[in-house]
Image 1 (tube, protein in one colour):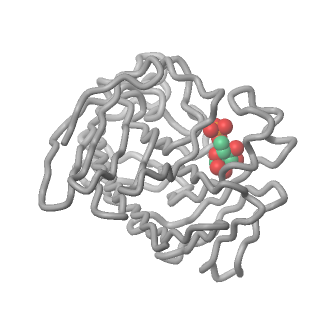
Image 2 (image 1 turned 60 degrees about the vertical axis):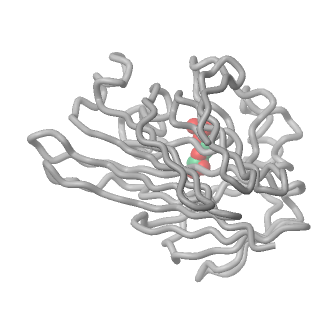
Length: 264
Ligand SMILES: O=P(O)(O)OC[C@H]1O[C@H](O)[C@H](O)[C@@H](O)[C@@H]1O
């Protein structure tokens, strides 16, 4: 079931599956703000200090990063998609699943941001609730007559309860125990596991090329105006990403999928 809601001051879409699982997505950024499994447990972190008025990027949930990752380029930090208002596209229910798609083209991007990246594109992001799994299917189409380069990521903030009782398993470089500040990029195995004190999540990606793993630590969090000082304890980011801009031919499409499953 799909309904229009307001979250903070933001128009948003609530997606509810027949089993009661729920996702809330703001049109601003097609930003996933909340994902609750059927047991009612919130799986994503959202900062109590986050702007919620469409005037600045949201801190938490799943920011959509496009067409630049972080400062790896001379364009807008983390791109323009998280700062633009998307449109609701197709929605549907099928069996136990519920889904909604969000769309963005260059015409939806505020002029001051579009100037920095003047290309014709169409983005589609579909959220699907399927039992204890959330799928995010992200498509980038080059609808212009010239090739362009793009990077992208789904910058997922997981609510972990206590970050120093959390570990990430499955990287070739070895397991990560959270604690010190961390901002690393790893070549992507398709599947990782995130273990917290009381849950185990399976994180999967297809089409992307890296995992970015981030927690700002105490000093990093203190420097962020949109994060309370104590909140670095509460989350870790594990992000399927294509960190470097790579070409997409005129008329071509790229597709990536990020799936998160609550295992226990
Ligand atoms: O503060 P933001 O622009 O949302 O960026 C938040 C973080 O995003 C990614 O994880 C980057 O790897 C970090 O270097 C960056 O600090």
